[in-house]
Image (tube, rainbow, N blue to C red):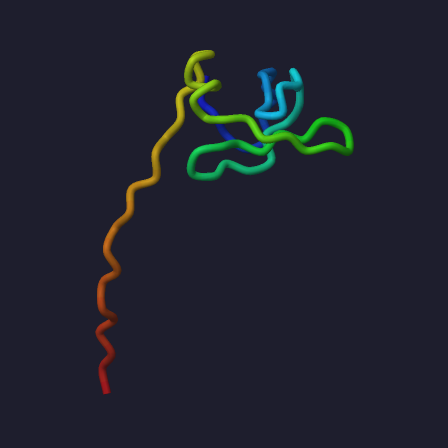
Length: 69
């Protein structure tokens, strides 16, 4: 399953609590999961081990703007 904002996941958080909630943010190495009013941090490593596919962002160099005068 593809990991994306809005899906429900269940995994151990870095606080060692088991959390079931909705992915609200995907950062470089961790994912923020919202469960009720609390937010938890879950590592991408844990989610990859559970079979989630995580697309890595590709950094592309900025191209200079061409402005006609």
